[in-house]
Length: 130
Image 1 (cartoon, rainbow, N blue to C red):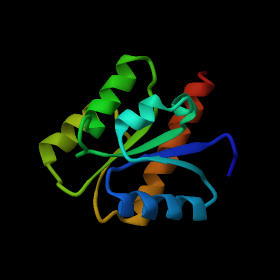
Image 2: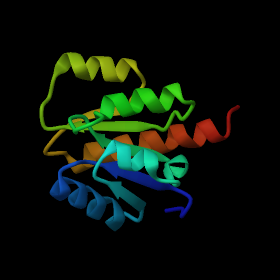
Image 3: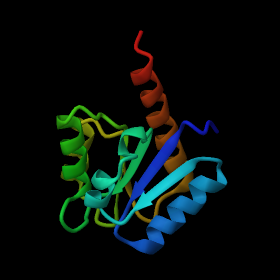
């Protein structure tokens, strides 16, 4: 994988965050992980994120709120939302707002990889508009 591709994982559950990071690192991706959306936004590297994987339910700022804030600030980072509490109406709203995927924990690795690949394609096309 290209060293320019950075996937950021944000999840307040340390085990989930570590498992996702380990899986994606094993596949050759460069990973940065944060326990909260607030920590991610405070990082100077957030602008270099090619794909964002973020938990929906977190204290202080939810994954959905983070996605809306980034888009509203001009940072349309391709985002995959993950949740242990599936909600069809929340999923539909998130997809309507432009998230790449809305996955339920435990996450199917093949489905996650498909979402990541879609997100990276979108990030690449955003960098090189036709």
